[in-house]
Image (cartoon, rainbow, N blue to C red):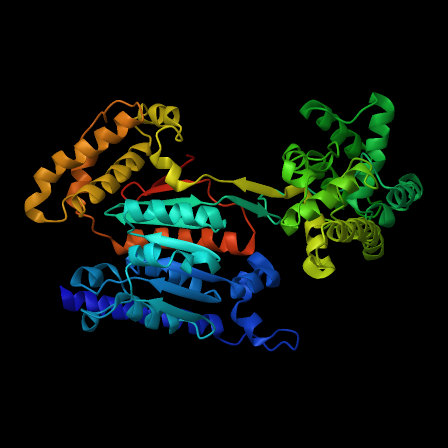
Length: 560
């Protein structure tokens, strides 16, 4: 069995190295693309060169190089994290080899932190790595300032006592903490972040910012200058659909006095547009695609231009209104945007300045594009000037926020997001946890809340007995009784009744605290993804507990 594990371990490690070589293999020659851009081309399309720069500047810490821990780091080393440090005082055992493909039988008895670091560094020469061959508990008590400089801290297989201590420390420092655990077929991830601000949320369905109901002066002048009735068929069929929407929206407002308010209204507007379509005298089959596009765009492009409620909440937040010298760049720019909305913006956010693709004559489309771009540039410049004023008022250096940051913020102002998290240590205080949520979830037999309860019970078990339930074969039955007692005590503190079934307790005791690599690999990828979100300040993070059941391939998120 050990030989098989070694062979499999070697195969996975070689596979990972080959993956890096594939990533690094030369793309077609391009004078504009650097070697690094070719290497990281796919991920640059996800978070851009500014996101990659943040990734390369980050220094993350992993506590315990378990199979799950190394899977997290693997998925961060490959895309080019700047540096990592592993904290782990344990020596490699045969159990480690069975669940960790970065270790082999020749490593038994060696430092787990050192060996894992060496193996991981082979995956990507761009990454720096270090290790501390000490128990996390020892560092937490003797060198609490050790964690001050990390961008994100990740912890696996941490005892409850150490987790509470680490949680409180990182909460004070405002450093994100990601805690992961994998036992048998069940895994969970808990995220702690005091405040996390996101500018680029990358929504699945991004609405175009066309302002057809409230056109700015240059746009209105341009659109009013175009007369569809006087155009020949060729020009008529190559007008950008935005012009068509504007013309027929004006007709609608003139007749009904307001924008289309419901599905029925929008269907009527579409019919008005359909009646305006022309047929080609030379080919009746030639359909005006721009009018077809205009009808399809009615649902997404015809709406009242307002500041979204979620953005209004951010702009009215105390941290936005009352800035201090310690305010982050996000809140300073948000205040500048708030001032813009109240003044130059006339109640509206800065214009995005981008247009969707359209079937149109190149000249007409480019002219329209330039009008939007010019207005967006002017809006961003107004916000930039206000940002500089705010920096001077706060006694901050004028270069502490770049113009590029402000322009990026303005482009995504309608999608900004603020995550206000909770402290994991508070989950151990019955008064701080939402017990109603737990009670209601446990009443549903399909809810995965039961796994959270059992996993929390296992943490209590570890604290009391210094082992996982069922870790020793001759203790499975006695440990079932002990784990039940730990879970019932926990539920009693929350004011909840006991679990309806004991099946889950028996199942976890049979796991004996063992990690399965396939489960750890899945959760490791997700944890790495969440880490990248915190580093790049892009995409919304999980809020805040994720549970995965590999048996049913199902997952759930809960907020505590």
